[in-house]
Length: 292
Image (cartoon, rainbow, N blue to C red; front, top):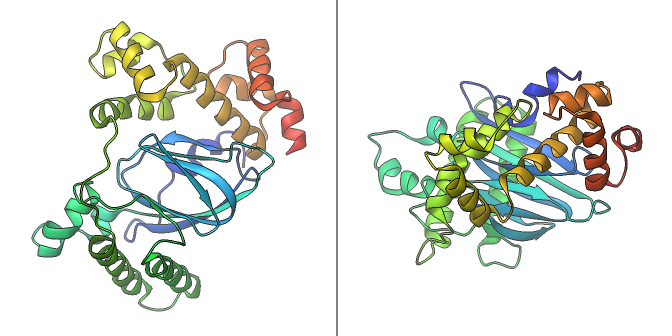
């Protein structure tokens, strides 16, 4: 993969075929990348931990995960994945699909009564499913069956996958339904999602606080306060961390040199990039690419 192809890697790619938007990725931290930074998309996602330990954050609530853990990410929810300790290996499966295109029908009672409330977060269900939970096995078995169906590539697999997904959502809404939704800074999160997506799409360009404040119709001072209260760090710190994360991925998956990568991720000073990268990863960019 060359450095320009990287722009279509991971979250910016089509999840599954256009006419059947369902796909599965198998990922390993730190072998594939050191972390998945905070981001969001319109697809629904299940993060299924296969080996190791780590943490997954969904709408800023952190969950410690290990083998067997399943995390549900609803459409539009902010989420991230990491391991805290770079020496710890985390293997997981991303099951991602477009719930709106794959399952919803405007005039269908199942969509109106069950699926739309679930996908929009109005039907409260758990985010973290662990092996010691009652009914956990039902969820795990459905996801495992979906994997088996996809791997066999049999005729009619699309119908089988959809049938399993409907069964999965039946289980979620009847076995796991909570008494009330878990909310955390919902208003601030919705507002800041615009900023997170802007960074995801434009991190390689110059981004100013004034620019992102205007995106969410706030004054500069109010934006800085709101961002820190929501994410626990300043916007400048967040942007720098995101750029360094993307630089680390490019060093692992592209053939670009350190100068090219520093410029592509938005650093206009090579010395500052190298110093910042060493503080974040413990080695210089050049040594990091060789180490990986």
